[in-house]
Image (cartoon, rainbow, N blue to C red; front, side, top):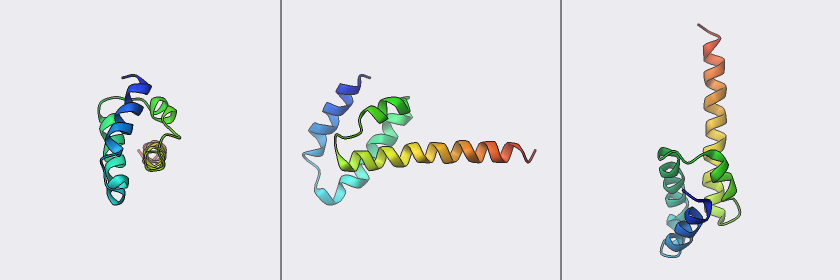
Length: 78
């Protein structure tokens, strides 16, 4: 999926979401993109579009780094 299409989709959707729900919707949006194989580099290119989306992207990327670290750490225990 093209970066600009994802950005446009978020832009259309976010206008119809109440402010208090945007954090949760942004998180679900990013998780859905990841579930469908969108790469971290594509997500990073979306930074700066919306503060809620930025937070969700940062969290998902940080979570991936933590999981990779945990996998590396746990593999040494074998």
